[in-house]
Image 1 (tube, rainbow, N blue to C red):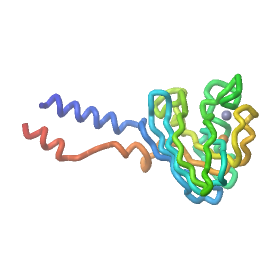
Image 2 (image 1 turned 45 degrees about the vertical axis):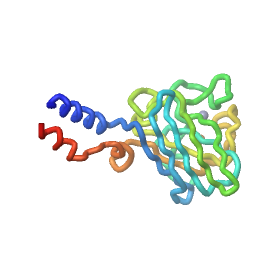
Image 3 (image 1 turned 30 degrees about the vertical axis):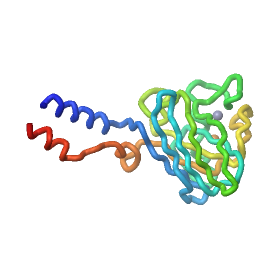
Image 4 (image 1 turned 90 degrees about the vertical axis):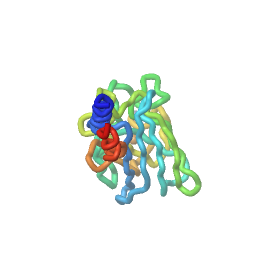
Length: 191
Ligand SMILES: [Cu+2]
Ligand SMILES: [Zn+2]
């Protein structure tokens, strides 16, 4: 019984470590209004992104992970360039691409809503050079127009219209799956 108790303790400790496997990012527009969320999940192929947005112009929009976790409107230039760990060219269709932060375009429907699931292949929320949480973190940026997949430096996707900071912090993410139901412990200790 003691062994199981220790095992549970170990698991709980592991969950509370710095690297979350899931994280919710709030997305803001140039006026500073929150217009949706991106839920990031660590998966085998990379980081899965579940995107829910509103208030966009109908049609396609470029979206990328940018290198700094700083979303200062209205232009979001503070987010820096695309997140890139290999010195690649921009674009999922570029022969010398792509940036690790490059993603396929998203499409807003006639009401300006987006519900999409994307995969940031090769990236991770855990430690390492391809971690989108390394150093201070990164950001998720949505553009005014569609990314053509080849033009430098950003696929001719126009202005940055939404931005969300992807970073480690106490009030977001890591806490979601840290279960501490004290009754679990009591049951074990009764033995
Ligand atoms: Cu971008
Ligand atoms: Zn790029």
